[in-house]
Image 1: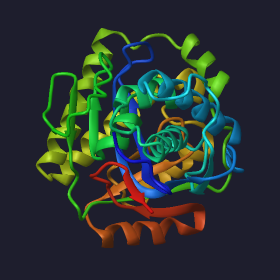
Image 2: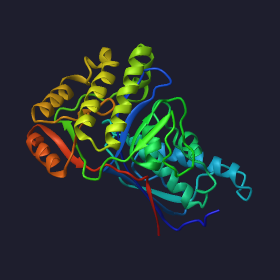
Image 3: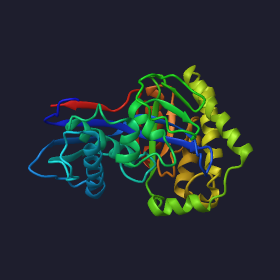
Length: 329
């Protein structure tokens, strides 16, 4: 067992979701971790449990689940499920409900920080952290896998692959590659933000949308593999073509709710502006409202961001090819 720490800080990036293969289980899909906007959670000693001011209900639920799991995993633990004596501080966080996986990154950062703070991180598996503590990965595993490994990930949804091996070995169910260090991602959000689709509304949406169908699913899986292969070979032109087509085709699965492959007029108009400005590797992340545009160089990203700055909120991110970091004080 690891020794309990005085103070633990976990930092992770954000998750771009390029799209799903299907609207029904097993969903599968492709996505990528980026370094910004980042999420950072600190856990430190306190006289009693203090969840802080950022999403305290969610963080309290994670802490309660952690206490129950820790009791089962440690024969020395007191047989109760009381909350740990610590203070949680969310020092940075990704904006919620904008397609960047903020809930998953915050939940996993909190779960891992609590586990390390209590000296139980070596006893808990990744599956326990994801499924029992953070309660994530129900439809897509991209953000959960990416939290531990970083990189660009293809997963077919058949298994969740939360093993503890550090190997990047590919399988028929999961592929992971590292985008070139010079590639950049311009993140854009419309000045007029559409209503988010999350929580109960998202659950109802997936209940009503028909399945993709075998041929459509297979086409999306193939396009997803083309994204992986072109990224591995650092062939940006082929990567851009595959990514843009994949994102549009996956978005069309949700056209009955979105009004097209993208979620509403503000996002659709922003996509058109990216295309007209010369963007070639673009799309909507998850339900939006974030639009991404991958670029082959920092200079290309800066130029594209400058061209679009008057019409959208913008930020430039780097690919994140490593998992979350832990700092002990």
